[in-house]
Amino acid sequence: MAEKKEHKIVQASTGKNVTGKVQAASAAAAGGGNATGLRVGAVVLWVFALAFEVLAIALILEKLLILPKIEPLYKGIGALVLDMACVIIGAQFWKKANHIDPASQKNALKFWLWNNMGVIVAAVAFVPFIVLLLTNKDADKKTKAVGTVVAAIFLAISGLASYDWNPISQEAVAAATAGQVVYWTEHGKKFHTHEDCQALNQTETLITGSAQEAMDAGKGTICKFCEKRDSAALEAAQASIDAQAVNQ
Image 1 (cartoon, rainbow, N blue to C red):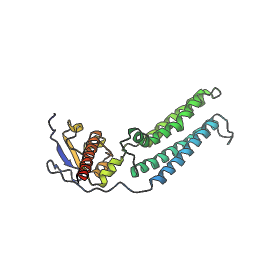
Image 2: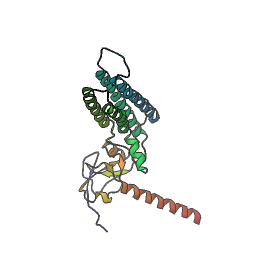
Image 3: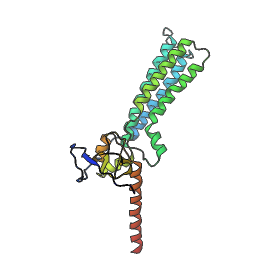
């Protein structure tokens, strides 16, 4: 069995070295709000984004003839600007909703999808436009070149703005509500509930504080090793309680 790594532990709130005398800190629950309303708002905006994508295709390929004095290419780009705005604003609503009512890490696929929905919508809002424009035989070279480059730039901007760089999990909110003391590293993406976690064996310095402080530092998800260890401990405790109940 590997020898336990000795860490230098720094208190998040004070920056002081607290190695050997870590105490649990109280923590507030994640911010309140109406997650359902925010998600509905996000979906509505994303529907508008797709509508603007269709409008952009119709305008740039001259399937819809409005504002005849404006070149079709520019009309299409204008619709793409509105498309991008709806994608980005909708993503901000969705991310805020996820921080109020996050998904659980136990279902890895759902957790990934839930936290990357904005990026997925960004792709849907621009990739079909690019494909249709490039494969259209009637569009001239200038329209194809400029339209494709603009759409690709808007796609990149929308994707980066929609990505949740600090996702939060149900487990993180539960730990914060319980006031649990946790550990994390300066450059890591997750927090740990055990100082002796195997993922920390190569780390010299740990930061400790409440789960809420970890979330505020961008560590909104729990380490898989710690999560598995905590689940096993909880199951063992429940089994012990059940056994005692049977014996009584």
